Image 1 (cartoon, rainbow, N blue to C red):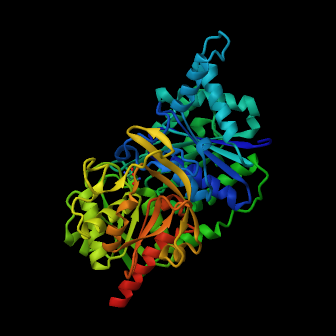
Image 2: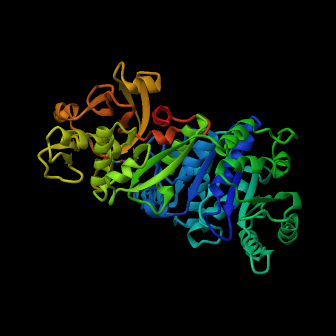
Image 3: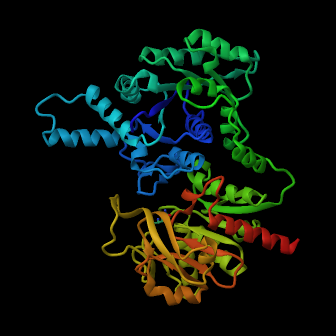
Length: 531
Ligand code: GLN
């Protein structure tokens, strides 16, 4: 896009200090000043996408509307900036390299040698330009500067300033400053080294964001400024926030707008950020009713695996001036007492057999105890299995977990179109659905026509519909041709809804998703009834 300004966000010292949240928050501050923002994640991994990355290690695989399987930072971006991103916004080395190698094989380089510089660095720059779709395009570079595999990206963003002009590029480096409790000192040395590393690659940042666990004194910023050649008002202190949704407020009041003002024609006034202030006041509201939601899951040691589901639950609760208390229920050991101890149950998406019986048991418990239930993707499949078993089909299962079951109530459909991946075809990204008139699903969405994102291989086998109907579940939404089951719900229950899709990806902190709002509301109403 012509006249686009670019903000590059890199990290130093260590990873995991909130570079993605910082990038998204800078975007939120600019949006509040009327700037149209776009955003992109560049990841040096050699993976082609995040589809096969282990969620236990990397957290959730976020899915865009056009079916890109990405890193969870795209989820932060979508939530903070209320955007719907696409393939273009997630750039991994593997994706660019495989294209380069394919082009080389196709003879597109006319006999020239193909090299990381300039070919990969050029491809990175092209990918950045292609994704830019605002007045300001923010680009986060994954990992930390100096990582061997990230060198091409750092070189690419340096070269980029020659492509579009240095005045159109702003470099933000996010560093971590530890506090040494024995000497009661903030130690800036690792940050200084990280800034030296960046300058060694030819980039002097315009802004340094200093992450600390506790608030640091101004002298910390001054020290970093004097050692790094960055103007002292370009060093921003960003201590830990109680919630990530506070970070846009911290960024707005941090003085970064002075740096932004030199870079962009934005007003002098510190942005108001009213909607964020309101959101944070709900997050911290005290003495509000608490809803205990049990999440039946198998990756219990990394909450990032279910981050969009958790954020969707929280957003729905805050919206109704409630708090949600997430209770983790281990799918592998789950027992009735665990289900009884919570006010509502959520079974999120998942792949593979481990823990699935516990999830089926959760759905059965919800069906037989009128416990509010929201099933997401696998959470719909286990509900169908539970209902079919309750109707007498004891061997009912998904062919994912028992390929030989005679009652494959969840199965792989012949001729399904989608992305070929290990072991089958994935239905990925946005698909339309039509709700059954008069269903709870129609009521919740306020429409018969629904679009949600998908990521799954298996489908409900409608040959067994009579069986799961008699177990208490009805189909309440299908694909427009009526073939694929998109929603099921239980009649005569407070709230029992499941979807084959992943509604959590479209929930926003300022605009929670109707299925999550429905669950939280029904749960609170049931609680209020018993108080
Ligand atoms: N494993 C199931 C499938 O592939 C569910 C996937 C999911 O929950 N995202 O259909």
